[in-house]
Amino acid sequence: MNRVYFAHGMESGPWGRKITALAAVAEAQGFAVESVDFTTTRDPEARVHILLDRRPAADGRLVFVGSSMGGYVVARAAERCPVAGLFLLAPAFHMPGYSADPAPVASEHEVVHGWDDDIVPVDNAIEYARRHHARLHVLDSGHDLNDRILTLEGLFAAHLQRVVAAHPGESA
Picture 1 (cartoon, rainbow, N blue to C red):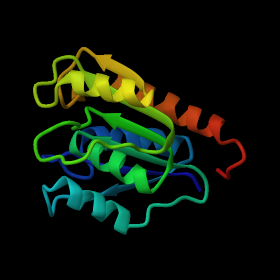
Picture 2 (picture 1 turned 120 degrees about the vertical axis):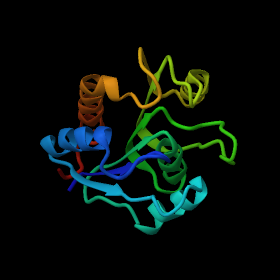
Picture 3 (picture 1 turned 90 degrees about the vertical axis):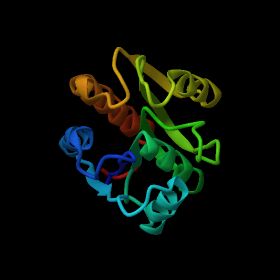
Picture 4 (picture 1 turned 45 degrees about the vertical axis):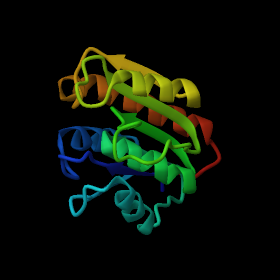
């Protein structure tokens, strides 16, 4: 079965507004959904280990989705656990306390960021997307992107469709 793993940001929880909305999109396309609870630590590298300790896997296509610190976490995890899809929302790249510059392995790689993000500069996402040839969407929004849920749902649905199309031989 195809599977999506979600990683929330530093201040949110495993079933916040964005994750709940995007999980419904994934389930509608036949993906199983897991949202990891990282609230036991604020350390980004510890969160990477928490995700990898779950041994993320899928019988079909594996997709990671992360928001803010969760974007950093899934990008780092995808260095050691290649994924069919990587969908990053305002990822916390090049921030103080985040030691690595992720180099994930993903067939479909997408970044969504807000022009008015006052937490993670949009230029960080632009540079990351340029370096990794990731599809980039910059929206008229802030860091949490919660005012663009409908747009995020559409972008994520299209992302999952591209993942499926890029890996046709894998089981649903």
